[in-house]
Length: 334
Image (tube, rainbow, N blue to C red; front, top):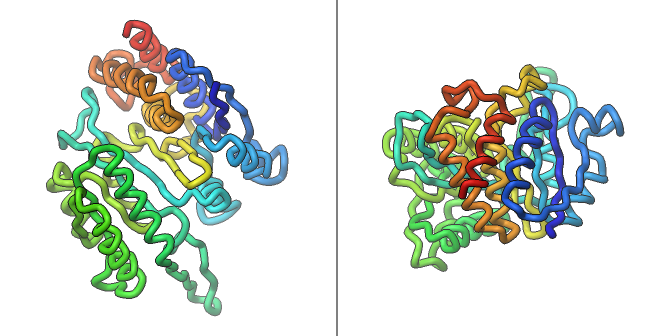
């Protein structure tokens, strides 16, 4: 029996969570879900969007599945996602981008992974006003953070039989901060001679991914570039609706779809559950249930390829739970 923290999220989060739990239950894997709240519901109930109870639960169980949580733009509380990453030192953001049959894209044969440093860079949030008419944000890059994220990327490549790691940077302009990242990546690469290594300037990387994404495999980069490039990669394979994610540290792992909470669709049973189900697939692999993970991915792939019981954005008319139930039926036929 596995114990996993569950945060259902805001907006469409509860619907996506319910659909995903139905799929996981159909695998037969025994999971005790320890449910806690974060986001808008927590703010209303406890006066904070991230209660200590949620942090303690993830720290105790070591693994969590989370639905999307609303983050106010420009005002209000800071991102719960960012706060969780900092509080639990979830330093590695893992974002796979993979083609699935039945999802129309201009590109084929894409199977790459973005490894994003999660704790520093401009996202460290060290910023202030300079007088009334200027604002300044400080970019922080440290050698220890560079070392652990690059080593994570190479270890992931070795474990998952990946062929190449590409370090993405802007060291031609930011010679000290991004220069430190690139220097560190080159040093770590020498420890893994079995894995090909290269580097790309971030703007060139964006162009390369649109022109010839099949040439790339594992991409490792600082926080800001990772946020942008991972969305670009999601666009290559069908959008955020099919983009899973994981935030990993030495003591905890948090799995979640990368899209937002889409509050205008809340309660309508319309939103595509693929990203959250694929996040659960990553979670199952993480807790040692690789066979169940493969079965869920195969069942999801079959439903996507058939294209009949899928949500509107995938060309179908099924609701969130109806699509999940179609996946459950495929699981039972295996």
